[in-house]
Image 1 (cartoon, helix red, strand yellow):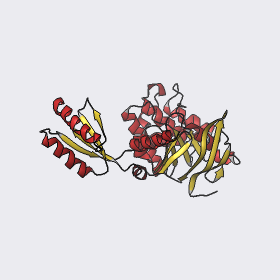
Image 2 (cartoon, one colour; image 1 turned 60 degrees about the vertical axis):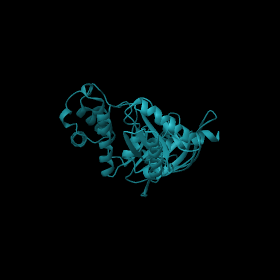
Image 3 (cartoon, helix red, strand yellow; image 1 turned 45 degrees about the vertical axis):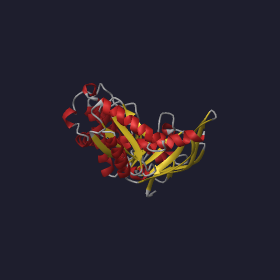
Image 4 (cartoon, one colour; image 1 turned 120 degrees about the vertical axis):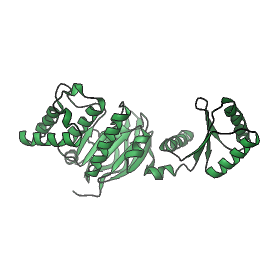
Length: 320
């Protein structure tokens, strides 16, 4: 069954012992795209993935993967997808090649095809140089890339990645990001759950923010950032006395209904929230100069996904 949507979810609901985990979820993921689901622990991310991968039945609503209903056509759905969970599925006592070949045999590829597919994936994930080393000697990033490769042995149309870079160092995280980009380029639809907002910003074609079982917003990273119109102007200081003087001046303005700001006493910086960076710079610099106080640096920052996430979750907290 062909469809332009890899995943289509409508009014999906799930509760456990009277506690709502998913409260009428709606989302859609186009074929061949990378979709990121953001949310804190307990938001409902794992529950949603479990339903979409046929491991759990929903209480209400509908969900399809590749056009097949996850409840009524579970076997067809399973034939389309692979899942890489937070817990690694590799056997550290086997080599990288042996792990991949074993998965190929479990999928009934046959000896020659399993071996050929293993070689192909080792090249694709830049593991060919370590193919015959035991996985116990691999770095965390190498293990994660091997885990991804094992999910692709039978060429799934949809790949679910549950927080794939949790616990990895920055270098290993970048390696996994590059692997995900490569999958998308080859036409695999990637459904990514993550707590790292930078990860979603870097990888995802579209993003949904999930909190307390509800989708708070969905769109591209730029569309979500436009939900928070205010950016920041950051004023940096080298002298602690100058920083203290500037802090007093800006606090006075804030008290008069002026600029809202945050401070970093260690870095000697003040971040002023604004929708008009030029006006803030002009006003604040004039105020500082009038008191013979000079900022050593001025930087303009646009809203980030962190700002979006905090704003959206704060709105939900306020409604309770």
